[in-house]
View 1 (cartoon, rainbow, N blue to C red):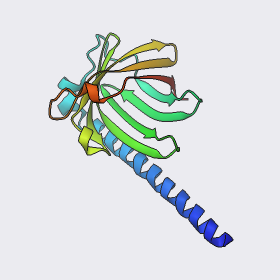
View 2 (cartoon, rainbow, N blue to C red):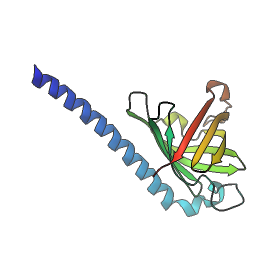
View 3 (cartoon, rainbow, N blue to C red):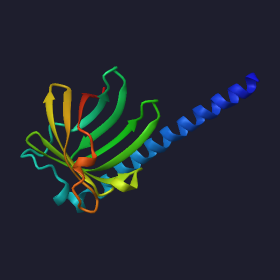
View 4 (tube, helix red, strand yellow):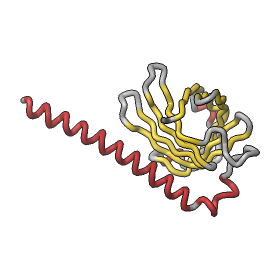
Length: 165
């Protein structure tokens, strides 16, 4: 009986580990692919801000109200990459693509995702940077991959991110 319990527990941990490895592999692969194709996409993927470095460039962790890390997101040179956990702590989503910043307005377009329905979709958010804390509010607009405005299908949110250390 106890050995069955241990086998079930080990299988659960192996599945979680496999999902984490898959998400990390996707994240690293997408980042490498984007980096290799950076020159050919440079014109349409550069940040809109007047400086060449966006104020949000870097690695950030989303912190939930109870202090748990629920998302890891990186921004660099007009590209973003992220992985997310669901409420049970399982890595449940990964995506990457291009972004632009204009003042405190942010737009991201998914080029890669473990959820194929959002590849090609764009969303607009606003942000406020206070030191090493980044506050996002969204969605002000969401456009599906086929160009339809689907903003009303998404709930509003506020996120607090801190620089990853």
